Image 1: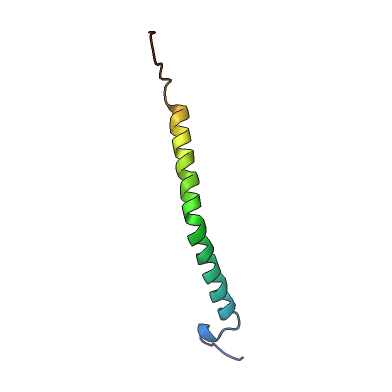
Image 2: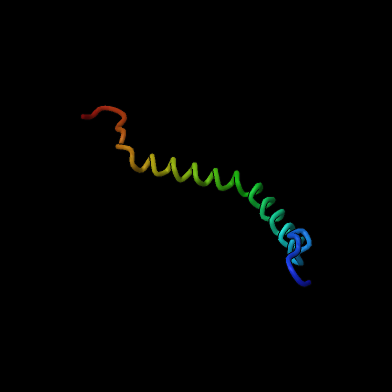
Amino acid sequence: MNGPYLIESAPKYRQYLAAKAAREIVERITAPITAAVSGYRDELDRMLDAPAIYIGPGK
């Protein structure tokens, strides 16, 4: 093809759209898992940084 052409008629445009759709599906599936892992790590860091709590007689 000579000269400029529309993006829609570009040879790899359909392949790009398919890859983009697949990537979006994977992101939708993994987003809750990623959020859960992130929340777990934040909570773990908070617990490890917190001072010790002693229950019972002492101090």
